[in-house]
Length: 137
Image (cartoon, rainbow, N blue to C red; front, top):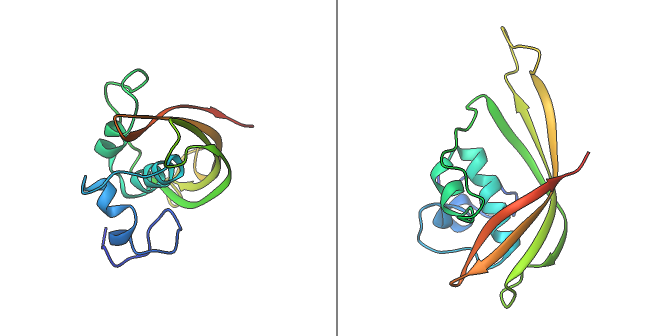
């Protein structure tokens, strides 16, 4: 992704000043919300390696394949609990909207969707990790 383009996490900052340095390993997320936003942006740009690196080892899958036909469109952070720079755990509630396989030849799963989740994070060794989340209906 172009560093000058608006970051997919919708902070309003350019990718190169927002999630880009986190994806590149140049810096770590300072809060649980920052990690959640950077993980959303990783889904948007197709960076499965970053998603795996920021997933807690106790819950991380052995591999992750992203759907190239799924386009993440919008992120709305609804609430946070803890997860600040001096916390060791936190939760972030968000809604992420996506569009998938729209167009000619698209199957029954094509169209728009949304993911409403309360994600849990922990900080270990000064780094935040995604642990798991509860998907809301």
